[in-house]
Length: 280
Image (cartoon, rainbow, N blue to C red):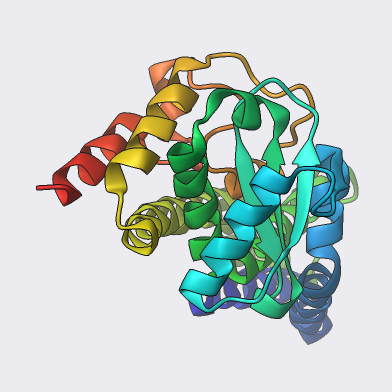
């Protein structure tokens, strides 16, 4: 999180040098903080709405409700709001700003394909994200990546269409700062995205391990991931802004080698292998 703020501050500072205006730096920091606060309090509602999730009560699906309730008791977590997404793709995600304000959503495809131990494994994985505060971390990280991309894009567009800047930009120093700013504006979003991917992948591995320890049955989650990996089609309603929240890539497990490298999720076969090794 500190690294993201450093990127925002560094990018704002370099651009402020080009235009000789410290206000640009302050504006960049303020935008980052405001967007992070908005995400903190409303990001979960947006994620659920974008996914088409519908809240349920115990009478709507007693099996799912009991699995979630039993695992929250086991883990000592408060009961989250439970949602179902009408989608044939097997998937699930958790969101919220903390365990007291968390939500858990599963697809109808997941409910149709999983037996009870596998469903428990998936739910335990998602509750691990809640207990580890990944739900808060990833919402804020996504917003900060977006802010960095926005600042960079605005700077490049303004320079391209309107020019402007410090009167000293014709000097060697002014030209140097302009070049540095352009390079920073291009590289900053790429670096921020790579950091986001690294964080997301590490939290998925952690949630796998924590979830397996919660159920004491790693093979159940491994089996669930194998079934999820076997379904190649993408979800019907999916956004790149929320894809990192799901237990598996909602765009489908098929795709090019290049797209898998830049996926928000680690290779699912590697996750299955780690879980199988936990049984030994």
